[in-house]
Amino acid sequence: MSLFDKYAPLKARVDIMMKMGRDALGVEFDDILGTTRGRIGNREIILAGTNNYLGLTFDEDCMAAAVDGITRHGTGTTGSRIANGTYAEHVDLEKSLAEHLGMPSCIVFTTGYQTNLSAISGLAGDKDVIFIDGDAHACIIDGTRLTGASTIRFRHNSPEDLDKRLRRQGEIEGGHALVVIEGLYSMFGDVAPVDEFIDVTHRHGGYLFIDEAHSYGVFGPTGCGIAEQQGVLDKVDFISGTFSKSLASVGGFCASRHSEFELLRKVMRPYMFTASATPSNICAALAAVEKVKTGGHLRDNLAARAKQLHSGLSEMGFDLCSDASPIIAVRRPNEAVAAMEWNWLLENGVYVNLAVPPGTPQSSSLLRISLSAAHTEADINAILTAFKSMKAAQGQMMQDMSAALSA
Amino acid sequence: MTSPAPESIFEKIKELLKPYNPQNRPILLHSGIMSDLEVDSVAVFDLVMGLEDFYDISIPMEMVSDIKTVGELVNAVKQLTSE
Image (cartoon, rainbow over all chains, first blue to last red; front, top):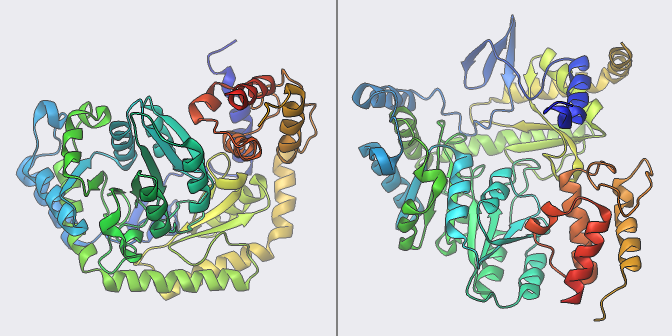
């Protein structure tokens, strides 16, 4: 018996995937050529799975800000903010995001994952009850695990189901309800009815936490996200986001309309006991926030490209998981077919994400596409052509898969 | 509401497990939900939601994490419906 024996079923799945081609969860690019292009071997690849929604990773101002951050303050912070101090750029970014969101408090974190881990574990105490959406991201689930609070799931995107569960819970003695939702869900690309969730949550005396990781920068007149788009940003209690998508960097933030949120800097273990974000990451994100505020043209192009791809794939008869958004998930019949097609697309110059259970809702197997404002109409046509050719090559692919699996 | 008998809870769980058991593996009280029946973690929570709605109870996630077998799930439902 080995320590690793428990992973035998996982190894069997990985072995099958490797027989069909590459490791979809460990793709190695030999070069990143630009916002929407990578290179593997001699092949140029269209990047359609990188969550680079506003296409700012190669923006001249963001890159210059990152370089300037290194030049002025070095490559690393060498420690946490509670033990080693806060840099001016951390404060500048917190002020900029707080101002953008119209909230008195904002705290920045080193990664997006750590943001929800920190905020949720800090906000919920032993007597509180956390209610999370049925399709909640892993970082939300893991955040609840760091608390002593009881955690209850409600049906995905259903304010009615949340209402039922809050009623079933009744009065929470000595505690409060913390409801956690996401603006745009990362796998299916569907949008939450935030306005209805706020109404239900506040009617029961609870607090609403919304993760806008995939929607900050992308939705709303000034890019604050789905809550802004639905006109309820000022009613949201807590809003979190990441720097690694629209903000073209690495890190995350959580802002609140409650100024007492500042106290959590001395409570949140994943914030207190890890190194703070580097000057280059923070400075790049700070430059990107300014781009978000005035990025109406980027959001317009992103929406147009999403619509173009969504209607093109629909016309081909593909089963899509939601309406047009920068995340377009194509539902496939099973994991083996999805993996085979994912390989085919990569071999033919298009990188998307292979998403399989248990990381997906409804145990779905998906070809997940994320679009960028930097994608052109011609890029989308190329992606559509690849999907059309993939469909035409199904017969040959099936034969190849059978041969590979029996080898 | 009178607390249901463990046998009827077991029957309900078997019914709700059906869509997640395409290979028709025998569902016994000592069957491991994830280990024997190979129901993935997301599907387990969907199964739990079905039980919550049917019995009008809340089964918190921290309790679900400790449940490994069908019998343990029966006991958890029995306990929550008795409260």
